[in-house]
Image 1 (cartoon, protein in one colour):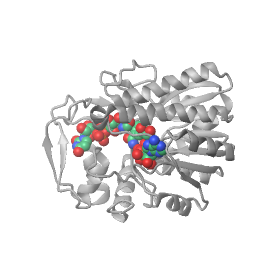
Image 2 (image 1 turned 60 degrees about the vertical axis):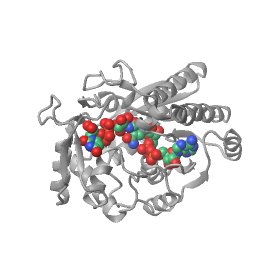
Image 3 (image 1 turned 90 degrees about the vertical axis):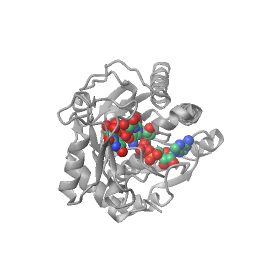
Length: 336
Ligand code: NAD
Ligand code: WQD
């Protein structure tokens, strides 16, 4: 298959390109480089042993998309491109509705007009909102609590409407839990600009000496060690889930919503301890206040992915910590 990957230079997109190329597919990347480096393309090619095609393009550039689709036919589309910082979405909602919602609508319009029938969309467990009880199944109530989460839910609804209106169209919205880790080669990984918002990249930057210490956001949660629980998933497992979603769309029509998580919860202190143990490093840290908007416990019910995609995670928390640290050590300043 020739697969169009938007946001293919980003963290999850780059790992998925590697898996697609390794499985023999041809890959075309579209990315505006707003949150990634052009250097990623060569890294992907070196690891996979095959070259992806790259176009620097914004998914809101309708004329640019038209030129791309007119030149080449695609069998499938994986849509990663978008913005993803919760706090920024509260301060600047239009950036989120423009990139994530308008961008998706323009992209799907071009894809449909040019005969693409299989779509995979990067959604997020954030669509479930703060009150959802773990393990969270796909039929749990949806109540995204910020503009980022609402933008993801809107695109899910847009896709479902498109599938209803176009019987030939097949789509999966994959709801990721907490992707962490990196390719085991250490040559691609997560490279956030500025100070990271998320736990694993923050922890890595403390370990490598770029940040002085980690603040644990809250140790008074009603959990065994008092810190909040999340479902961390290795980005390589996550990437492989996308290939399984393609296979599924060969068999099944219509619109599907599927969680990608391990189904297991890990606390902040458990992650910290695993990172120190596996990598033989000390992470200076202190206890701080809860971060507004954080949930106590969020982890997936991963049964639907197992039953429908035949996919479940294979890599452990130790693998996540080892591979994240390998990437950080080899690339202390990311792709710079
Ligand atoms: P990322 O920022 O590393 O990758 C996104 C890529 O899209 C970047 O390379 C960026 O330059 C590009 N991009 C952004 N806006 C664009 C636009 N308008 N046109 C073209 N390219 C554009 O993020 P990621 O962590 O790889 O996330 C990928 C997707 O997965 C996003 O849609 C995100 O919302 C979703 N997601 C991520 C997480 C997570 O924790 N990382 C969790 C759930 C869902
Ligand atoms: C994990 C845990 C923090 C940083 C976010 C988005 C979500 C999704 C994934 C895209 C929490 C704690 C963190 C730190 C800490 N993204 N923490 N000190 O909040 O579960 O999810 O990323 O869809 O939408 O909200 O992930 O990595 O930020 O936090 O103690 O410096 O680590 O409080 O308990 P989160 P995270």
